[in-house]
Image (cartoon, rainbow, N blue to C red; front, side, top):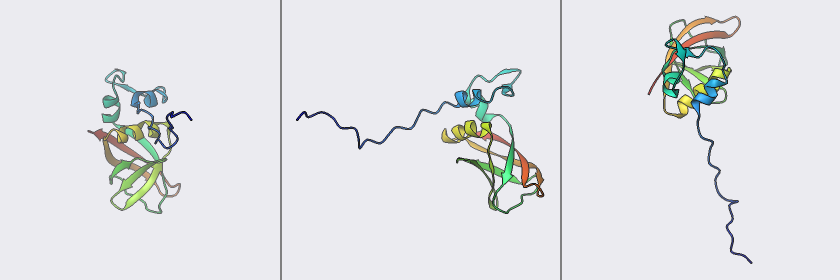
Length: 126
């Protein structure tokens, strides 16, 4: 009976990407040009200093070129492949940038092979 509609086989729509909402969760430290960030473009384009954890047994060198790849956790990619992961609140917002077709790349600033941690500096291009 009925003839109503069934939605059980429909694919759920992914939630809308709101880069600024994700960035706002980071709290302080998101000032640019002397004021608060006004746009997602400004957030994605700016330089980001990111702590990462080595995960693949590879040790990058200081100054090595790297890029970010979307994922949970956010992945740091070098010439050798997957170098490590970034597991900070900022990673969630940067994942949104990557979802909006930004490319985030930069260099390794420092590496401590003994602790398996390092710092990378990346910025975005659209």
